[in-house]
Image (cartoon, rainbow over all chains, first blue to last red; front, top):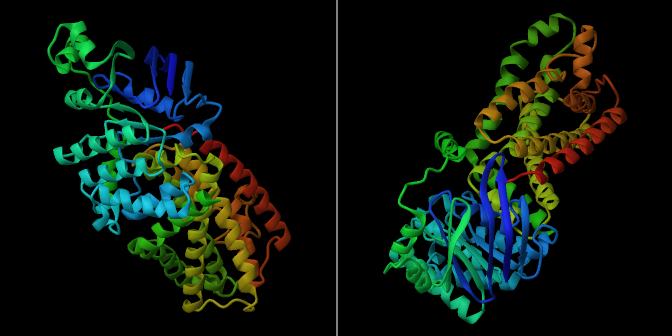
Amino acid sequence: MIRVQHLVKTFGDFTAVRDISFEVGQGEIFAFLGPNGAGKTTTIKILTTLLPPTSGTIELDGLNPRTQQKQARQRFGIVFQDPSLDAEQTAYENMILHGILYHVPRQLRESRTEHLLKLFELWDRRDSYVKTFSGGMKRRLEIARGFLHTPRILFLDEPTLGLDPQSRNLLWTHVKQVNETERTTVFLTTHYMDEAERVAHRIAIIDHGAIVAQGTAAELKQQTNTDSLEGAFLALTGSTIRDEAASSADGLRQVAKMWRR
Amino acid sequence: MGAIYILWLRELKRYVRSRIQIVVSLGQPCLYLLALGFGLGPVFRQAGHGSYLQFMAPGVVGMTVLFSSVFSGIAMLWDRQFGFLKETLVAPVSRIQIMIGRTLGGATVAIIQGSLILTICLVAGFRPHSWFAIPAAFAFVVMIAIVFAALGTAIGSVIKDMQGFQLVMNFLVMPIFFLSGALFPLANLPAVMAVITRLDPLTYGVDGLRGALTGLWHFNAAFNLSVLAAIACVFIGLGAYAFSKIEV
């Protein structure tokens, strides 16, 4: 379903992704783990057509996302690491807007929106502006939106960041369910090792832009002689703490608060 | 088509919902009308040019449309930083459709703002030479809105932070307004000013508005319209190009 060969991405003289290769089969749940700044989000951005690769080939459902952008985009859904909702519109309007952008027919759009908002317990707040939502509610709405157009491949970039255990449980249960019933391929990143161990069929660990190990959770534990995935992760990536450059968005959020937008 | 419509509708919803912003954005042109229209009125009259309010009201309408349309383009800065832009960019919709939807939305908002200010001008005592002039003036409002909404989109695609926004305001939008003949007649200007004003796209919009509303033309309707149409094509092309290059 996803095939990546010798993918490289450089920004100036910084190499974010160095020569990674992996494959994800149809109906598989694949976890991409790594410390901050390891290259996870960059890889997802390349796979989802937001960034061009410097070199290497990628394939999504047999399509080249560079040359067949539209067809590729129709096939995947993505929940971004950082917010991507329209805060000035209501939850319902955000869902409908998404449905229109993904060419979901009107009736299906409305029925699925209702179903998903109910599932993620947002239906009662459907007519509230997203700007009045708590962090967890926004996250749930983003996740519900990602399922709206029944994608064949689902990218989840740290989807459980800031979610309470109840919502996390709900999310993973639903992910597993669509994976089993609709054979949706799932590509996820997370910092919570227990989640990866619980849902992922296969795991790849990336550090400094390169894949250092891949396999099932059991294989990784065996390979590193550890008894937990967390132990295996630390054994593979070391225990130094990574810094990520602050984005200009943080500065802007301050200004935005002042301007009340 | 659906994508263009829903993004256009989004701009409109945002506008209608931010009532405070509507009041604020109408406040500035009203201040210009009051301070300059009535304040400079006596001086203008003594110079033998008649009513200054009558002269500058079309300029203030032009200004409103200019500010409103450029701002709507720059509002993309917020969408970029708060992530919504990404949501539209990964959708299976071509970028040109997204760009057109946004730009038309911004232009529509600017047209509404311009119409509101024109109404305020009429209440304040501005009188067009004929009521049939209003539709012709409206055509110019539309042209100004499209030209500068496209410019706004181009700028919004390029700048990434608040500093860039200030830069654009001080070195682009304000000069476009002040050097457009919105506040002073284009006749008998010093040579340098004459050249500068003719390079300013808003000059043709304001002249069109003033000509249509008061019958006082510096150029003529056909010339103004064709210049605006040409600039609109250039800016839309520029906007589409800049938008297609956005990386998030």
